[in-house]
Amino acid sequence: MKTFWAGVGLLTGLVLMLGLKLIRPYAFHGTVIEPAISAPEIDLTSTSGGRFSLAAGENKVTLVFFGYTSCPDVCPITLGEMRQLSEMLAEKSKDVQFVFVTIDPERDTLERLQKYLAAFDPAFIGLTGNMADLSKVWNAYGITREVELTSSAAGVLISHSARLYLIDRQDRLRLTYTFGTPVEDIQQDILYLLKNE
Image (cartoon, rainbow, N blue to C red; front, side, top):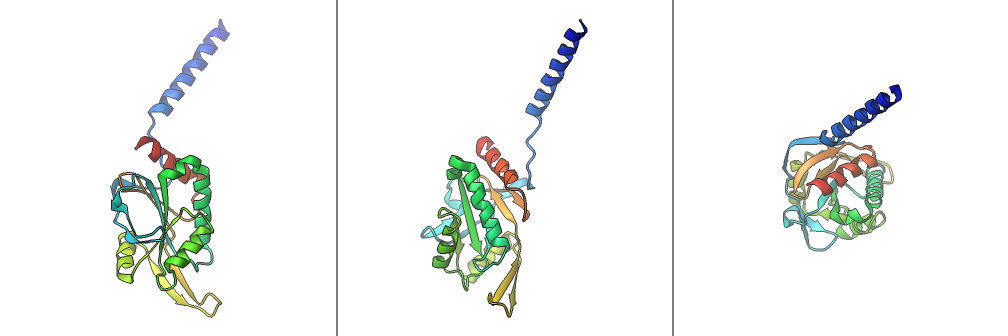
């Protein structure tokens, strides 16, 4: 009889735990924008040809990073993680657009951006434009950049913000991620947005 009641108690506990898990809201891993806001428009020249615009309504989740092709560390690491993320998403990656906005328009021509991004994933979208158009986007996303002349082979280095921005299918800015956020965490958040919103 003791075994029976112990079994009932165990089963009841499991049912309660499952019930709590089912009703508990999803906990995002990045920095949540609450309430979600309309993502600032990005309307720039694209390596995919023509203009890229968030307002075009691709009905995709968009992951945006701001960087430059001559970056010695943060940018290639982040793009490598974005490639890993795309691979982990597998067939779901077709519902996600990975966007790289230059902070170095003087050197980052469309041709250079295209060649650089192709080394990570040919599907990645590179964006550039004139300084006025880019400054508008940088300011809207709170991007800081500081140009530094060096005596190294790189010549000019640019210190810059290193956040990823996650925009949902309704073009709402939902989350940001600091440099070094585990790729698995970002993957889970993207899968949640793709499935539930």
